[in-house]
Length: 211
Image 1 (cartoon, rainbow, N blue to C red):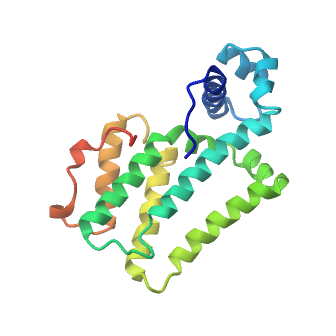
Image 2: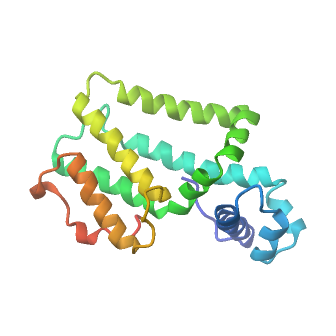
């Protein structure tokens, strides 16, 4: 993961991305202008263009964050070294939950702007290749005959549950406290993975995003 410099230039770039994430999620990518992003950040359009030459480049930078999270998650999957105990599997699952929930606005952005993101995938061969490689890694994992089918199915189902909660696609989710949502989601994933109660971490502590 890239180191975050403390320089004003780096801080402005990060602020532009955070504000763009807010506006793209609220109003939609197509209905948000770079002028609106610049105004909310408190910089001129010229200053914004110094960091990002186009609106597409802003969206691309945000998608790259999601790809980074996806690659990190795939690196942690039980593969070459299968998680040996239920407690290890439980810790792996909680790490994934905290990572996704801490980045919930990013996944909401991707859910609400599928058309724009799909166009970026098509127009940028390098980005499309990164996306393809990530999908291939996940597919290869789920097809690995050395892993029990029961584990592969339940991990896939758990990922689906986590992502559904992250984007709030299940009616009624999102209004509750983040701590409460994480705790209930963690409990549901532990059930899916058939983690015995004795091997589960205290779910009362699941409420703060992973650092």
